[in-house]
Image (cartoon, rainbow, N blue to C red):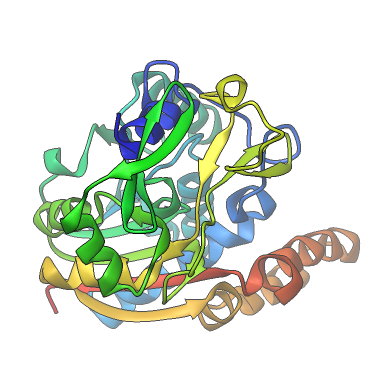
Length: 330
């Protein structure tokens, strides 16, 4: 089978890694910015409120998270919207795009436990099913979870069992690789269709997404496996890929130039690409911390400050992770 089909089965098949709920954070296989601090979602909530104040989005906008997993990110946004502008909870609609019913129920349960009847959460199986006038789309670590093809020495990969063999002629794939000056490694599959679906889902929107990678493609293979906070290069000869299949996360560095091209081809304007640290500071994470400091004991403030440092310090998540932002309908 093609490598992209193998990766899709690993992550999204009936027994795939994302087909059922997995813990994220200390008890899981990896940390994310969402699992690190509520102020990550809180900062995006502040940015969303600013978009309403600026007049780009109306108060009855749909806030939509894609790839929500447990639902923590969207729930953190709801919590901070309630703190910063509570009247918006009467008008804003909250939506999660989720293909798996088991995860939908997990998300519904978490929202019921967190907010009771105060917040109504809706679901769509895909962006193709969503049609709204205005939206604010958010995602965290989604583009690194798209299936990819692998290329090496002018050939694409196929998989037999769990063995990867580079012997497939794939001229169109190599054309894409040449566009991004990539001679070996990963070429993401599906960015173009995803961007087109989002462009059709709302007449006007802003999309903010965070992921790790760079604007230009890495010149080598970045594909790796995360299992219990250990990282294994995919081609590490000491690992048993069959044993890890569907039981661990499989990911790679994002080529943001590819994401940008996909959205621009769909008629969506690229706004900016910034390091996560710069983006969060610009969106007001430090101002939110000062609000916290003025209203809680110093001990609690320092605890939250240490978590926020993980989000913005260069040696942690601040530089390796990037924020990419798009707009349609200006």
